[in-house]
Image (cartoon, rainbow, N blue to C red; front, side, top):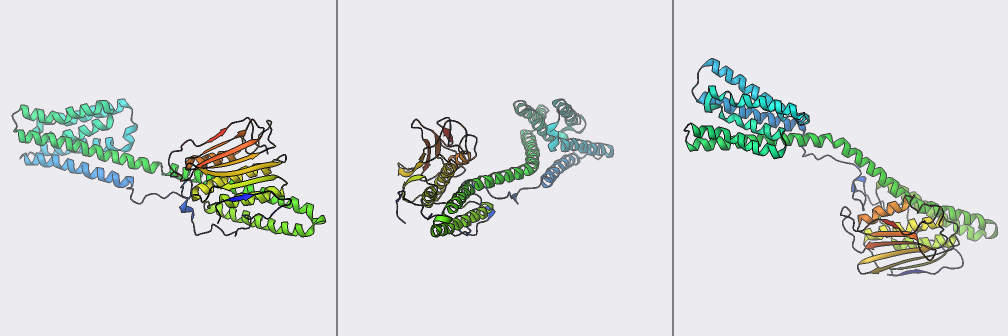
Length: 439
């Protein structure tokens, strides 16, 4: 394939080299999951199979609480207390403390009012420190759940200092009554660990609930994005093809009586364009195919000639990156579609050059006026679609009526586009005049 395409308008219409492509072109086995080559969006959202269910996360938290409850009961038994009443009271208090902790650790507890949180926190504080007068330091490990409740219930600027006070309270008490430093250290580490573990498991359960609660919203967003892709691709692909079909049909109608042989040739070309339009419709449902700026320029030259529009087409940009080639070809389609919708256009110039790591496509046409808005104007969706495409690859597009009275569309794309989901660098449509090509 040559590196340069140049078209000089002839006296009569020519066959569109790009209009006769196989209608199955682009059907390479791609699936909706492959997504749009520019947006990278998949056709449907698949939840991760590794994501734990809220029920599993909640069960892990319950098991951890039961283990800590068992540790407290074992500590009391290890102290040699054989009084049945005391053991029953100990068991009842442990069940009550960890029952409160179970409720506090639930995701819905985060929606409580601050007054309710403080009330529960005060109740749990009484359950934590009052039994020490009866069970002594055997009850000392119970500051862990209280420390976790502090972290779960209060703002961070208050929670962490108060957490430090709670986990150090039992060790300070133990040191004050002459307990060896080894046991003091044990109480400190045990309280810190219990508080952090219960807090971490509770927050993990919260996050799992939040993720599962937003799955429906994520799926709805994916569906909306797919609808937007479908509408955009339908506009970009079929607007040009249907305009070409209309022009070819009008030309054939004029030629049937006077030049039937030429009318027969134009009918063949019309069938090719119609087949391409049919192939485009099929491609919209499965993704977006790669397009060629060179092929689109050749097809545009023929279609413009059929519409009696003088066109100078000069494509001198060599071989392009597939993504840049597709985006620039889409911009050319949109520009030519707008020209075909405007009956007053008599001449246009289409040029594409490569310079300093970028490719600049310019499309200039006459026939624009300052009244009305067309499909290419601010109210149309065509330039809005192009804005999204060029922004996605770090390009830029300008469109508007210039001082020379002609409408200019300039599309600048990087020779090596950035990642589709990367930040746009100067992308977007900028209207430099008060009007665009009217419909």
